[in-house]
Amino acid sequence: MTNYRPISLIIFFSKLFETTTYSRLSHHLHVNNILATKQHDFRQGISTENAAFSATDNVFTSINQNMYVGGIFSDLAKACNCVNYVTLLAKLYFYGI
Image 1 (spheres, one colour):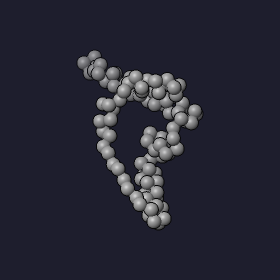
Image 2 (cartoon, rainbow, N blue to C red):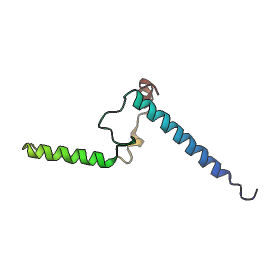
Image 3 (cartoon, one colour):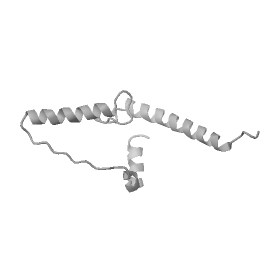
Image 4 (cartoon, one colour):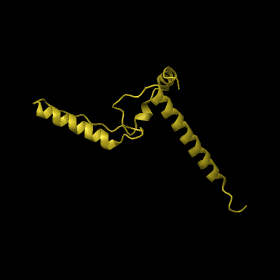
């Protein structure tokens, strides 16, 4: 009983809840075709390499067609701090979550 650490149980249940939630949410989004085809994050079989290749391909195709190419890059690391939770909950309800 001296090796018993209750904090390890909290981590286990947290990870179990996270895995179950992710699995069910992913299934719901896939079955109802909610995600955009260009969505590369958190999807099975589609990685950031696919997103980088797609962006690079679009740039080179535009350059080959003598079009102008520009880019805007932003750091969204703290984007969750700006979420309007009333709007978020309304959107989750709209999508059946």
